[in-house]
Image (tube, rainbow, N blue to C red; front, side, top):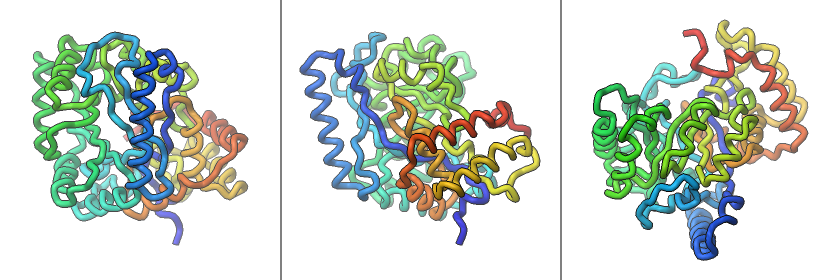
Length: 373
């Protein structure tokens, strides 16, 4: 049977995390020792709880690394980050180019969560804006009672009212209720610029002090947007699209700078909402300009014996400062195939060839926001 993502797949990808040794070297010895101990404990815990392919050292978001100030409670300083997160946009609403564009039913969503957990995925990425996703995750958490609890990442929606700080706290209350948890480990602004609204970052720091969130950050689209947020006290993470057609965050130095500051990078859209894995016969006519690049990617996969998914994954793995990669799938079968692809070895020359192909993709197709509907 051919891979299910060979038609069209809206997933994102896998990668292992990296620690931020450069920033750690500048901290006091006591802090470095404590961080090293926590990293070691994370590695042992992951090895006991996860299948062999995911026995990788977790990243640790360490607020004291941030050079931008932000005095935060000691008990909130460290949040372990698994190297792989399950993205759940597909689980709650129509999304992407694959089967999820029509929406997934409850049973499929629960089966995907079960499969992810059984295969060692210990992080779930969701958002208030993902339709039924938070509620479905909440039901799964209640029924399965997974131990240890997965890392939970959620996002508050775009702020457009006159009291943005209050809106953040109201959205958080709704997410906590839907998920059935007392704390969200990482809480992101779904629109990064919202962190710049007066009072919003202060509100998030109050939520940290109250134990309602672990740390906070932002979802962004480009390096320029991310750069405007780096000086926000307490900023712990950035989530952004990264794939062979979009390495702007690495090329601009943004990833290196975020790493230097101890800000964790979560990569998303690894497969460009499935476009990089679409077979020629399954591509929509609006993507015809991508045909030469996608045909070359398919030829590279054929010539090297490495799947397109593995090529896309390896290219993101090669970027600096990635703490975790968010994957999204349409089915249990796609999840299994992505996990298998993550274990394929890819040499540096082949990665460079894949990146060169990605750079040849038309600019207007490298950003889904610019796709015609």
